[in-house]
Image (cartoon, rainbow, N blue to C red):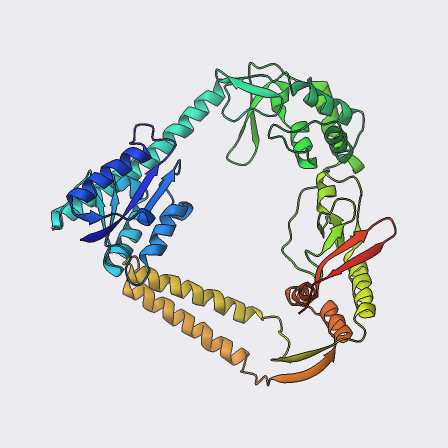
Length: 460
């Protein structure tokens, strides 16, 4: 008796397809007829997910990962139709080749039976092309329909805060419309965004999801032309396209323009959000004494700020320089751990990887992907050989620039304060951060008296 797996998928745009339960019922009946055992743990199901991109289907990827196991967990994958397996022909070819040729696992469509002869392969290829055509054509029809709705002033997006959707148009949400008008009134009066957010949250007002307001939430409302009576659609070049609609405006043009002008002024201006992945010695350790949120890099270079304050959820600013807070924490730790020594037995301290080695590492990962694709029949042998030659050439060049260095193991007794000083000034932020996180569980910073309170990890 063969062991089988089942893959079941229904996307939101395929209302005429069998439901997941119906697909599973048909697959179970087929498996029983064909003497295939179908364990529950090998039933993979996805609801409301498109088949266009395999890497965006978690259950599908889980099934592929299980198929690579040793010993082979199942002998065949059953689907209701091949379109359930993939809508993209490139994905279909890649994964079918991987499963059939490399892993010895067949894929069967219970409603599209095909044989093993040459003509059956042609038939399966035609199915793949038609499935991809259906998906591409559906996307075009959806875009065309949305463009037509937009040109008529009909809604093509969920209603913004202050409105509800009804019969293809926006109608006023009496419960929240007043909040929108109040936001515009406060902005026009010169109140900063953060102050508006604080006022809304302290007054008990909440977003549609019942959450606290944030600076970006209020800023989005103040810049949204839907409140003037328009519907909006993003153009190909990122510009806003506006069409007059039939819904009731919540503000007039004069008030909207006044608020827009105020948003560009000094303290009222909403700076763009920036995210940095750079780590420093105390990353993730510094906490706000007012709300307990983490202090993160602010828009001002070299300074930290309470992340909740930046969003308008905390009323107390905790702006502090990175060097200042690091110096204060290290100074306190030196006092607390003055008589403590640490025994180190390891290779020399890590150094930053130079650019050539980083490039070489990425090229090696790329070569591995090409090898896997070759084994799956996606790339030709000639392409694989060229990729290997290019990698070997770069590897030889890297060895000439970076000769091997004999790093002997060191065995030293080091005073902990000396290690802390070294970590605080070490150029590799991740390494320094690991040192401090091994000793500290957190640091609370009080802006009022610029004091720090340290919480050490328990040691055994």
